[in-house]
Amino acid sequence: MSGEMEVSMVYQGDRCSAFLDHQPINPGHALVVPNRHASNLAELDEEEGAQVFRVARRIAAALRNSGVKCEGVNISLADGEAAGQEVFHAHCQELDDYAKRNPKLGRPFADVSSGMKGEKSRWREFKSEVEREEADTGNDKAKVWAKDGAVALVSYAFQSPSGDWAHYVSYYFREDGTLAKIHAQLNTFYGNMTVIREPRKDLHDVQKTIHPPTDCY
Image (cartoon, rainbow, N blue to C red; front, side, top):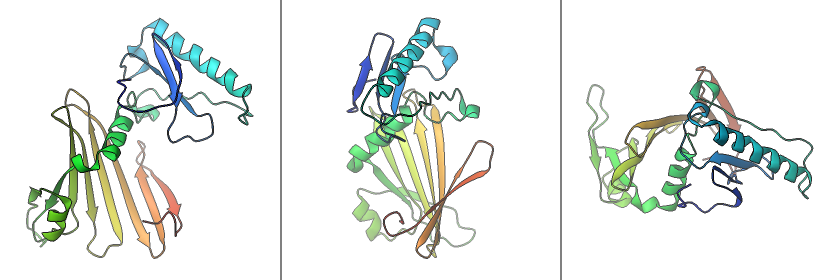
């Protein structure tokens, strides 16, 4: 709610606001969030919590009366990591958008070790991505984004020498420097098909099979 991101606002009040999701599951997909930072439902006072659900009800009613095809409405709340909460007050999504809008602010790092068995990793910062590529650093690289003088997002990419898999890990940090979230994704490449695995909290894999040509990368 800092105003740094451009959003399609559908409601804004003293206690909460609502805006359209920039990656909607269906047309009309909206997010209702408290204006005051809260990582879970228990941190809201009763009136803040009540207002969030009042606004969700009003948006559901508006969808049914709009031109958007709406046969039903889901109101979802994931309260805590064990319940599947991944974005704490949209903070991690804000950092993703910040990185996309400011790709040149990402400081490139890479492992400059030879990769021989038993050798320790030696990470080094480069002035630019071009300099890193010219150094032929191999397949392990990272980018670090700082915001207001503090590290906000660190993204690592590890790829096998054969190129048949790539592992991506991102660390998201709160404004106070504490770790907000770790996201990991393993992509396995089978010819012209990519299988994406993302670990769930129950430690089982979610597998998404992507077929080329448009989605294979």
